[in-house]
Image 1: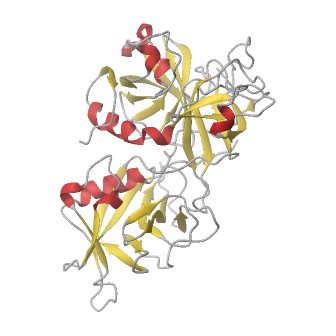
Image 2: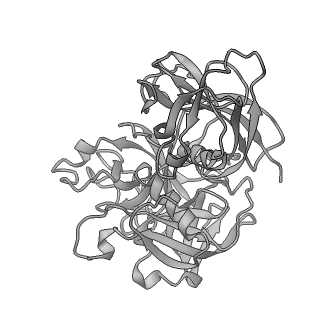
Image 3: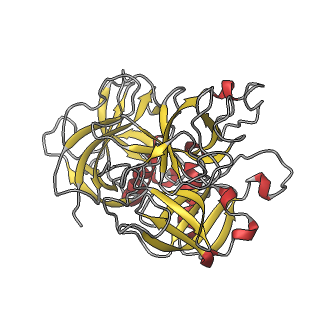
Length: 430
């Protein structure tokens, strides 16, 4: 297996008024610039330098230096500050990768600023006692002198890359082998139940409703991955056992089946053994903290669900491109009449014709983030529910993944060594 290492200049947080933060604003001011090495699992040993920025306008945030130092732009002082190394480096490295949508921190290191550098007195330091999971880094920074002149570099696990472009997609087309390498089939007693998305070498994201009480014997679940077929018919397919399932305990249909509220439809699964990434098996990126959905943005939903409301499961993975719909439109009386909560979003066409359907549940809704020169996909949604399949003004409804980033992170940390099925209501700061 070859490693593709990409040197990233990651500009993630836009600072306004000292260390306050505004996300996804026009790039007139720069943000937290993390220079991060991303460890991939595909391709050859090639180095490239690209600029990775959160932006709405095509304006770069990075100041042009291609070193490995972590920098934060202080818009109040109109200058760049380096982030001073501290005893909290490992925690800071973990949270930094996580906050940008990279699930795994692989390694970190400390480097010195050369003597005589003009930057030596321009630092942000971290309030170590205030730094914790579930709390954004920007809330723990303050200007300082950093007498040691030691700064942080990171190594994060790459994601969202497609090396090959070889129950509920209606009006879609067959996917090509390797085109969506994070897609998995979740099977109970050998029968496809739901889709899911690889986010790391050990964890899958899916929907809570895929795990009703009748389907909670972990030993009977299998994850099929590496193939566009949901049966053992392709040389690249792998089948792995499931060790742990964690679903959101506030998913109300599990509390009362008569409740008409599908909020918090999210779950994560831990694999019994770690994955080896290949051209056909890769993780998808999570949204970065604070990432907002854009009305009209096109995304791709994939799955093996029914090819029609009364149809049968697809033999080959289906893909369909659909636009994100404004929340107010989707909550209109002729759409879903105020059933769409802040933890959901809709995607589809007003006239229908292309949609997710039964069997696609738990699968991914992804979109290219346009945050770097290299195309990367982020998991914006999880297939959750809908009225019919591909009906006019009844688009697919998806769990808004950005709302559950702290929950996902906390679930993985809390239950990584806890076999069985668990429920968890809210994120905990561990």
